[in-house]
Image (tube, rainbow, N blue to C red; front, side, top):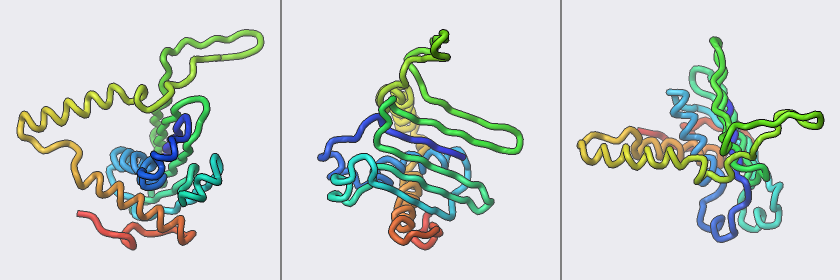
Length: 193
């Protein structure tokens, strides 16, 4: 599984001061996503990160703006997450799952799918939707509707505290890997359930 998650621009300094770091703020959504798709928990994490977009600010705040995280599940499934705080072409959010029977891809969204080909360019297209608010507007509405339905019907939510806890555990494991420069087993950092 490959998850690409790149924001269109760096957030303001005040955001970084409260966000908790790249893995807890941005990558945590990718950890959650891969858990959903895989249906099994990663058991091992290796993370590398850089201060490539705004090195002075990232150094001052002890944060990173670019990262690659590699995860492995107990059954051997390999996952790669690629993060960047800046992709000047818009919000770059993609997922690819490759298996023995084929491949599933979720590509970036555009305002429309018109493409232009001429003698000097091929398949020129509209830029990606610029930010996550546009990209996930429909999903946010469905999340709120599911929450309201769960309350109204008295049923447990599809996603709960434990899902957030497990994603945070992966973020903390990634931080340990980054600090120690090695693959880290999730159980070294904490337990779930």
